[in-house]
Length: 409
Image (tube, rainbow, N blue to C red; front, side, top):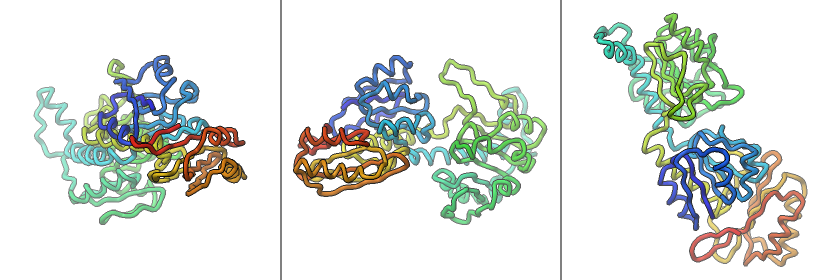
């Protein structure tokens, strides 16, 4: 099996991929141009990317052997998830691996902004000595507003509580409250209440531009804003204008509506001329510890799908966790259209081949179904061919236990 890892995926990924079976790994340090990438994908089964490589339907069409895509990051916006699902290609990511890194930087940014550090740094570089305590505040006893109380938001909640902050949060779904955090009834209520507001939500139709001029005006005049989540959550033009007018005391922005695609491209933002602003180049999760954890997490998910058929934690696929393949059994996996009668047709084909199903797992999501069946004994080529010919089959594989690990056919 061949794996292609792009964009300097952490070296720890290699051992995680090869720990489940024989894999030949090819690495490219950056995201190659389209022609080079298509050529490399012609015989690739597993693809590992970060945020720059765009996997659209045309690229998937150029990868006839592709089994799965691993996003070695949190987001999956760079992949056409529906097109991948139609081609029976599950997509995995690492949504938890860098949460600590993002939470730490967010809390550090709140402290820096409330002390007015960016403005003082700018002044001292120009020979000024802003030693005054005016506008410089401790975070202890202040209200922290967290928008999105998921993996990052909840961890930030614990860290901020340790500094004596009063944590408030707003989330569209009910969440388990950590410590003494308080649930807010609406986003508006949170914005009006808190001294510092941090965003930790994905980019969706509901969250896009969630903080425009109206919402920013609801915030306290001396409040600070931190966005280390997605670049299209905040109207940065409105933010820059309001900060220039003295509304809001500071902002820390790590993600932007338009970001450079490489080192040679010039970065531009209306926030560049603002004084108490921390601007960072999308590095919220960029720590050595986080990148190593992401490398292991996403790679293990790729390998377990390739060699065990597990789709657990796939973002675009029915989730089936069949567990390790037992000695003496052969595993048949089948992605199919979610239509009445498919499972009956599959079992009839297995029975007609004289095989016996020892265990079976099936899940469906929308128009897609995925079934894993462990067969006692071996599966011959005729049975696999028969399954592939079934009305509704999208893709089917056989996983065989051998002395050197699991192999696929």
